[in-house]
Image (tube, rainbow, N blue to C red; front, side, top):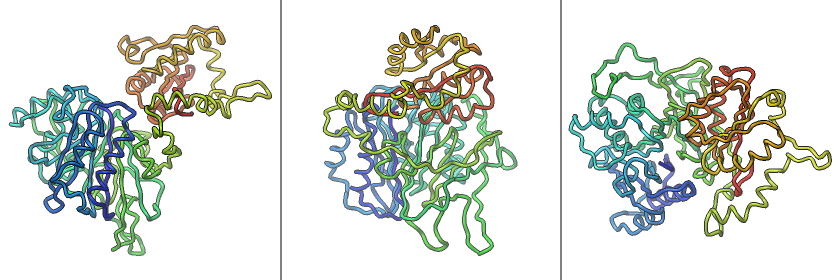
Length: 496
């Protein structure tokens, strides 16, 4: 799996050409992650809300050419409100092909379509269950079972809302995923969720946001109006309706819902645009106001209003999602005049090294400033060994660093490939120092290795997106004497 991008314009008239250009550009911003195919899903009939899917193996340029040369598309048609989703795929289940590309559909009528990053480990069980229900599959992927499963739930429980259907689906999924759904049964609505795979929501509006936080809405749990439906997947499916969003009235008679992004005066609707992406690089040229979803969050947009839901609440859980202002610039992610990103990285090496050193080198005192690490020097000095853990080029950077670290610290330095580290169930001791190295902060194996070490380690200074959120969740449960550090592998085309 590779990249997700989705765009929803509410009361912001856009031609079909503009919408498709936005989706294609979003995919182009994700090209650096690597992929073998790409696809988009959008409305081809605004009245019937029929969904058109175009998928092509190869580069985004191949998909783009297929769109612009499609004579059946009315590119000048204007949508006041519309949802479009797009995806770049790196094959995991099923060979690269048009049929195996995303978005995947629930059937020939395209009632539900979904894009997915991650791997569903129990998809074979769900697929067998759906085959027994009469569903036929056209691809070899694990993602197609999600689209067909949500259709099955809708046919079985038509009273459930779009968000509620998604909540029921993810309760049956095992593995890692980031999902964005679109449906002609719920026109102009979009639902997104994640578990173990990154996903963020961008907001763009001409009005001022009334808050910097979005409250998380919780269901009342399985009680009262639910029933169990036996299934061969392995465990019973719990169907229930989570708590509805309650409309409140203030003393002044102004009505508002629990979703604090509904920042419009009563009786007056305001235009807004939402962007869903697996990487901030696809959003930054549109808006710098984003919300990073957490595991098992379900973000739903209906009538232009965004709400974030969870089925369960745990102790010490953050009940709000902060609207963050991104600091990155579009120039950092654009290829520019270079023929490839590798060439861009090579020519930017001098600048990247200088940017990495800036503020960390004191030439007058001949000293190095390591920021938050200085607060943990006492623990580091007491350690017996250093472990450097990473994947890919981050692993290579650890190998390059090992010799000088051993010379300077006179400690044994172990370099571990994160996936191998997990397979071996490597023992971790209280007097170890673990360095987790990641360029993106989203490397799945490195994150799993980080979680594996949680019972033995203590909080540290951090850089990068997901690793920051993962470590924030585990601060209170870590042992007091050990320490681990999350570093960001600095590629030559970026700075810390």
